[in-house]
Image (cartoon, rainbow over all chains, first blue to last red; front, side, top):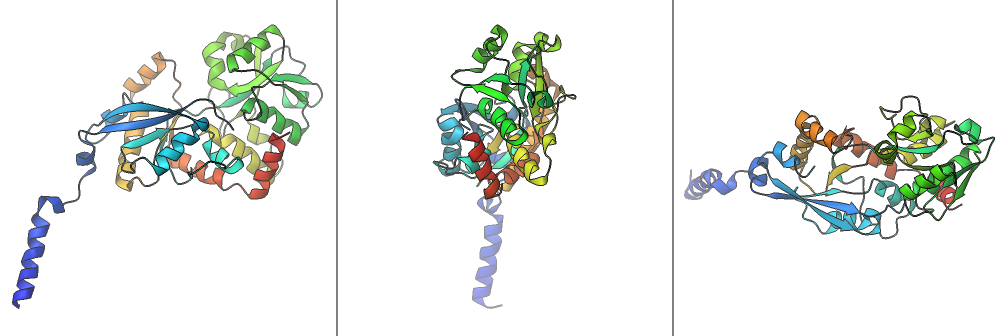
Amino acid sequence: MNRSAVFLSCFLVACAGAPGAQAQTVEDFYRGKTLRIIASTGAAST
Amino acid sequence: MAEFIGNYMPGKPNAIVQNMPGGGGVRAANYLTNVAPQDGVYLGVVHETLASEQVLKPEGIMFDMSKMKWIGVMSMITSTLTVRGDAPATTIEGAKQKEVIVASTGRGSITHQLPTLLNAMYGTKFKIVGGYQAMGEMTLAMERGEVHGRAGSLVGWTQTRAKELADGKFVHVVQVNLHKDPTLPNVQLLVDLARNDRERQMLEFMSSSALMGRSLLAPPGTPDDRVAALRAAFQAMVNDPVFLDVAKKRQHDIIPATGEEVAAAAAKTVLLPKDLSAELTKIFDQ
């Protein structure tokens, strides 16, 4: 394995281990959020 | 719904409602499609007529109801054509023989569209009297004997005139929904009047908005995993005895449907063939 390949392997391992690299779960996304429900009001025209 | 939906969501978010008037729901749907973040935080409860409006009156519409991510239906909105028990006719067959006077708020409303459609397609003799402002006003006009009937949502009847309905003072002539309302097993469905596939497509188009009543949707770009979480939370909510008990105390009927069901209905509605939409537009303009 040459130097470039070693560097690339280390880089990929480091990225995979970083917290930001993991996909955010749905639970993480919604925690602390406020859903905004837009309600149309008024008479229908059709 | 806003009080409850977050309880069933992963992460238990809060929820608030923001009213958005304008264009019979067109403004809200345009906002959800083109302005609101498509991340699963912004949701909508919009008028059930928007999918049919997209087909019949597309001016100003910058949304596609078939591309919305439908979360679920809290309660279908069945409409009826309802007349006094002593009206000259209380059935579609009878209304082909005798004139029945019905009140209307105007051309764009079901109060005009339903009797007009029945007259044009089935030869009934509903005489439409316009100029009324609201459903309650038309109901009072029926009670005074000014008119024989009116079209409108079933819930408007059950919440205000349940006893009169039970006593036969008012009679439902026909119901508009894709499936019979559980409380009206003996009232004819509009779609069952269809004599051929062409008529069935038109009547299903008219009836499909019932399924989109009181439904929750997300903007078209909402990620699939969040849509799945929202749909699961919605179904958990409408099946929770605690939620159902609160709804009952507030006199809200819960007749739910899934997001998948309403998505299929919306897709079918917006794909009405052009010749049929042109025919309906012509009928409603009469």
